[in-house]
Picture 1 (cartoon, rainbow, N blue to C red):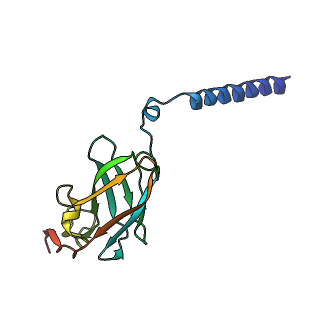
Picture 2: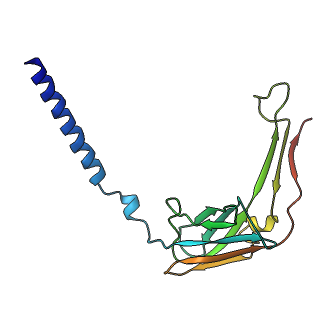
Picture 3: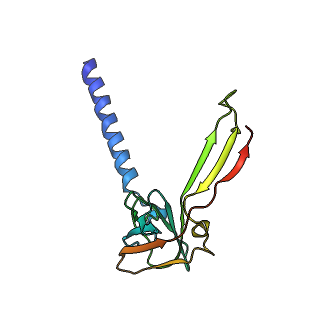
Amino acid sequence: MRNAKTFKVYGLSVILITLSLCGCYGRSDQWVEGRPPLVDASGVATINGEPLDNAIVTFRPIEGNYAAFARTQNDGSFQLTTFDDGDGAVAGEFDVTVSKMVIELEPNPANPQVLPPIYHSEHSMIPAKYNSVDKSGLTATISEDGDSDLRLELVGLPEKKKVLADNR
Protein backbone atom coordinates (compact mmCIF):
# COMPACT_ATOMS: atom_id res chain seq x y z
CA MET A 1 0.00 0.00 0.00
CA ARG A 2 2.80 2.38 0.91
CA ASN A 3 4.61 1.68 -2.38
CA ALA A 4 1.49 2.58 -4.38
CA LYS A 5 1.22 5.92 -2.56
CA THR A 6 4.93 6.67 -3.13
CA PHE A 7 4.54 5.76 -6.80
CA LYS A 8 1.56 8.13 -7.18
CA VAL A 9 3.45 11.01 -5.52
CA TYR A 10 6.51 10.33 -7.67
CA GLY A 11 4.42 10.11 -10.86
CA LEU A 12 2.54 13.30 -10.05
CA SER A 13 5.85 15.11 -9.39
CA VAL A 14 7.26 14.03 -12.75
CA ILE A 15 4.11 15.21 -14.55
CA LEU A 16 4.15 18.61 -12.80
CA ILE A 17 7.84 19.17 -13.54
CA THR A 18 7.34 18.22 -17.19
CA LEU A 19 4.38 20.57 -17.58
CA SER A 20 6.22 23.45 -15.93
CA LEU A 21 9.23 22.97 -18.21
CA CYS A 22 6.99 22.94 -21.27
CA GLY A 23 5.48 26.21 -20.11
CA CYS A 24 8.93 27.79 -19.68
CA TYR A 25 10.05 26.89 -23.17
CA GLY A 26 6.81 27.97 -24.78
CA ARG A 27 7.02 31.59 -23.60
CA SER A 28 8.11 34.29 -25.97
CA ASP A 29 11.14 36.43 -25.23
CA GLN A 30 10.73 40.15 -25.96
CA TRP A 31 14.48 40.56 -26.54
CA VAL A 32 14.67 37.81 -29.12
CA GLU A 33 11.44 38.89 -30.82
CA GLY A 34 12.69 42.49 -31.08
CA ARG A 35 15.86 41.58 -32.95
CA PRO A 36 16.24 42.82 -36.52
CA PRO A 37 16.61 40.29 -39.35
CA LEU A 38 20.19 39.14 -39.95
CA VAL A 39 21.97 37.92 -43.08
CA ASP A 40 25.00 35.66 -43.39
CA ALA A 41 28.18 37.71 -43.54
CA SER A 42 31.69 36.31 -43.76
CA GLY A 43 35.01 37.05 -45.37
CA VAL A 44 38.79 37.03 -45.13
CA ALA A 45 41.26 39.43 -43.49
CA THR A 46 44.85 39.72 -44.71
CA ILE A 47 47.86 41.81 -43.82
CA ASN A 48 50.45 42.46 -46.50
CA GLY A 49 48.81 39.70 -48.55
CA GLU A 50 49.08 37.06 -45.79
CA PRO A 51 46.15 35.66 -43.74
CA LEU A 52 45.56 37.60 -40.52
CA ASP A 53 44.85 35.05 -37.80
CA ASN A 54 43.44 35.55 -34.31
CA ALA A 55 42.41 39.17 -34.87
CA ILE A 56 39.19 40.85 -33.72
CA VAL A 57 37.11 42.34 -36.56
CA THR A 58 34.34 44.80 -35.65
CA PHE A 59 31.69 46.10 -38.06
CA ARG A 60 30.13 49.31 -36.68
CA PRO A 61 26.99 50.46 -38.49
CA ILE A 62 27.11 53.90 -40.08
CA GLU A 63 23.36 54.11 -39.39
CA GLY A 64 21.63 51.86 -36.90
CA ASN A 65 22.46 50.25 -33.59
CA TYR A 66 23.62 46.70 -34.26
CA ALA A 67 27.36 46.12 -34.57
CA ALA A 68 28.78 42.75 -35.59
CA PHE A 69 32.11 41.18 -34.73
CA ALA A 70 34.27 38.12 -35.34
CA ARG A 71 37.61 36.53 -34.50
CA THR A 72 39.64 35.53 -37.55
CA GLN A 73 40.71 31.91 -38.00
CA ASN A 74 44.21 30.68 -38.96
CA ASP A 75 43.43 31.22 -42.66
CA GLY A 76 42.15 34.77 -42.00
CA SER A 77 38.52 33.80 -42.51
CA PHE A 78 35.77 35.15 -40.27
CA GLN A 79 32.01 34.71 -39.75
CA LEU A 80 30.24 37.75 -38.29
CA THR A 81 28.21 37.56 -35.07
CA THR A 82 25.59 40.02 -33.86
CA PHE A 83 23.64 38.18 -31.16
CA ASP A 84 24.54 34.47 -31.24
CA ASP A 85 27.75 32.85 -32.45
CA GLY A 86 28.04 33.13 -36.24
CA ASP A 87 24.48 34.41 -36.75
CA GLY A 88 25.50 37.14 -39.23
CA ALA A 89 24.87 40.89 -39.41
CA VAL A 90 22.14 43.41 -40.13
CA ALA A 91 22.31 44.49 -43.77
CA GLY A 92 23.79 47.97 -44.27
CA GLU A 93 26.95 50.04 -44.45
CA PHE A 94 29.68 49.69 -41.84
CA ASP A 95 32.91 51.25 -40.66
CA VAL A 96 35.32 48.43 -39.88
CA THR A 97 38.09 48.12 -37.29
CA VAL A 98 40.60 45.33 -36.79
CA SER A 99 42.80 44.69 -33.76
CA LYS A 100 45.35 42.08 -32.80
CA MET A 101 47.08 42.69 -29.49
CA VAL A 102 49.68 40.70 -27.60
CA ILE A 103 49.95 41.43 -23.89
CA GLU A 104 53.03 40.36 -21.95
CA LEU A 105 52.97 40.01 -18.18
CA GLU A 106 55.93 39.00 -16.06
CA PRO A 107 54.92 38.29 -12.46
CA ASN A 108 57.04 39.46 -9.56
CA PRO A 109 59.29 36.46 -8.74
CA ALA A 110 59.18 37.31 -5.03
CA ASN A 111 55.38 37.06 -4.98
CA PRO A 112 53.78 35.94 -8.28
CA GLN A 113 50.23 36.18 -6.88
CA VAL A 114 50.46 39.94 -6.25
CA LEU A 115 49.41 42.49 -8.83
CA PRO A 116 50.60 44.56 -10.54
CA PRO A 117 53.13 42.42 -12.37
CA ILE A 118 56.78 43.41 -12.42
CA TYR A 119 56.60 43.86 -16.20
CA HIS A 120 53.54 44.66 -18.34
CA SER A 121 53.53 45.55 -22.02
CA GLU A 122 51.18 45.48 -24.97
CA HIS A 123 52.07 45.15 -28.60
CA SER A 124 49.79 45.65 -31.61
CA MET A 125 50.61 43.07 -34.24
CA ILE A 126 49.11 45.31 -36.95
CA PRO A 127 49.32 49.07 -37.57
CA ALA A 128 47.40 50.93 -34.84
CA LYS A 129 45.32 52.90 -37.37
CA TYR A 130 43.20 49.81 -38.05
CA ASN A 131 42.01 49.85 -34.43
CA SER A 132 40.34 53.26 -34.87
CA VAL A 133 37.03 53.94 -36.64
CA ASP A 134 38.31 57.40 -37.60
CA LYS A 135 41.63 56.17 -39.05
CA SER A 136 41.16 52.62 -40.35
CA GLY A 137 39.80 53.60 -43.76
CA LEU A 138 38.01 50.24 -43.87
CA THR A 139 34.34 50.15 -44.84
CA ALA A 140 31.96 47.41 -45.93
CA THR A 141 28.47 47.07 -47.33
CA ILE A 142 26.44 43.97 -46.51
CA SER A 143 23.51 43.45 -48.87
CA GLU A 144 20.07 42.19 -47.87
CA ASP A 145 21.02 38.88 -49.52
CA GLY A 146 24.10 38.56 -47.29
CA ASP A 147 27.76 38.62 -48.24
CA SER A 148 30.24 35.76 -48.04
CA ASP A 149 33.08 37.52 -49.85
CA LEU A 150 34.01 40.43 -47.56
CA ARG A 151 37.69 41.35 -47.99
CA LEU A 152 39.71 43.26 -45.42
CA GLU A 153 43.15 43.98 -46.85
CA LEU A 154 45.51 45.58 -44.34
CA VAL A 155 49.02 46.83 -45.11
CA GLY A 156 51.88 47.99 -42.93
CA LEU A 157 54.18 46.93 -40.14
CA PRO A 158 53.35 46.07 -36.53
CA GLU A 159 53.57 48.83 -33.94
CA LYS A 160 56.44 49.08 -31.48
CA LYS A 161 55.95 47.49 -28.09
CA LYS A 162 54.37 49.81 -25.55
CA VAL A 163 55.69 49.20 -22.03
CA LEU A 164 53.06 50.00 -19.43
CA ALA A 165 55.07 49.02 -16.34
CA ASP A 166 58.65 47.87 -15.85
CA ASN A 167 59.61 47.40 -12.21
CA ARG A 168 62.51 45.01 -12.75
